[in-house]
Every structure is written in C-alpha cells, then in structure tokens.
Image (cartoon, rainbow, N blue to C red; front, side, top):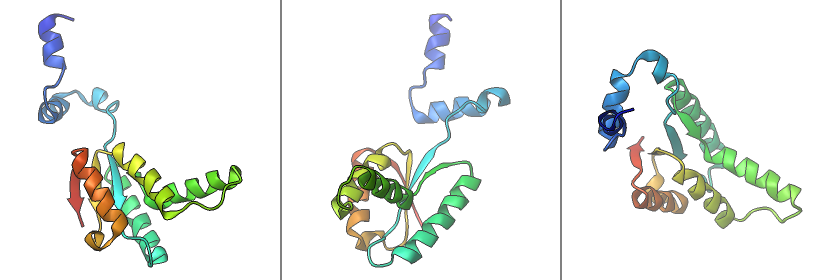
Length: 138
C-alpha cells in the first residue's frame, strides 16, 4: 500500500469514515462493526413497566441493525455473578458501576422519556457527555 493509499484509507473524522463506507463495495460492508446503542431508562420504582419497554426498544433497535445494550440484561448478569461468588445481592451503586462501564463501550446512548427525573439516567447522561457519545431521545 502506498503512502497516498494509506492516508486515504485512514479516516480523519467520523464523517469521512461514513462517506467511505457509503462508497465501499457491498462485500466489504458486511465486515463493518455494527453500531452499539445503550438504552438509558428510568428503572427504580417501575421495574416491570421499564423492563417491558426496554425489551421492546431492544427489539426495535436490533431490527434496525444495532447491537443493543439493555440495562436489565446487565443487572441479570451482575446478580448471577454475585450469587456465584457468594456475595450479597448487588447494591444500586454496583448496578450503576456496571451500567456506566457498558455505556462507555457504546456509540449511541438512547434516553427514554423521564430520564431527567432519574438519578441513574442523569449519571448516564453525564458519562455520555463526558465521553462524547451520540445522544438520542425518545
């Protein structure tokens, strides 16, 4: 590969990367990484309603081609881990630590209605801004 080809190959910005992907032959597009989206949804006090909504949003985003991080799945895995290790059930802070860690691996953070009234969602918003994530609202 020549220097000119290498410079053309390495994107300077996301927009250049997106433009290059649009010009890329179909066989190369299959190997591109899917964008990952995190669902930020108020949970405390309305667990069942929020879980159903998060599952619906997960199906919706997966149908659009995203990899989806659902906070309820993180919670389920965390609870199993604590149980296997013989620890007490995780605290709210433990859940938030794991969710923030997962959020950092995502490209887009989707904030559901009511996020501003949720302590957990506002922490997720602060992290999304801090790590310059794309933010979407319901």
